[in-house]
Length: 345
Image (cartoon, rainbow, N blue to C red; front, side, top):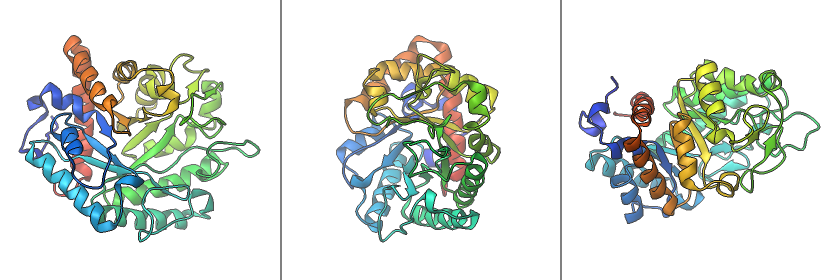
């Protein structure tokens, strides 16, 4: 049995209320740069398992450090486990932390593994120094030559084996310094052209085609015990013609968990993105996340969807014993990673 450990007063999973089980499944965004009433509500009432920082939440290293410490202190005062505090710090196009943090040119500019190792070591030290414990990196998508990929400016390259090698160097470098790495965007969006922030792209490659190309870096990430894998908001019609990967039982549970044997934290991309929000209401999305055994759902914008998701998780756990049992399995997995990576826990 996994204990919710020192940070939550020695509570173990059997002591968790339904509300705590529900909240641990949510990683939420918020507004502001300090511990506000809104952020307190997410911690003490919604009981979120994690938060994600964006540019609007960060001004300076000392401010970030105070914010992260206040989040963890408040969680402890509420009898909650410490939170995962995450950020997208890929370098290049996607880097929420600007100077005086080290500014890297991004994955396409990396020449060799030494560059990846340096990026990971420097970034891990800087994140750890301000209290962030998860980096939403590395990008493990592969953008083939001659394709105007939406990910061209964010990938390590065209060759899945090179992407694997570079990505693994980042994963190992981050996690050696106790920063959880997240490989994204499973099962691969390097061959897609439409931005899922705007609407739902579809991709018609079949399973065997993707296994020989897109899956290769993710298989490497799994072998190297990456803490998290983020699902994409793409409709892979050759695998599941109805649900995007982030809501798909076939992709999250049957493929990633059961077939590929991944035992880390599976998470959605932001459920506020157009690919999902334009097609599914939040309660439908939550029901699919629960059915697929996805551990954490990202809801990155402040607003009623966070509380609605919490209420829908609660309702489903009360209505179905299997959903409650699955929730306990997911929360054990989340707590296991918190115990492994969060300092002093």
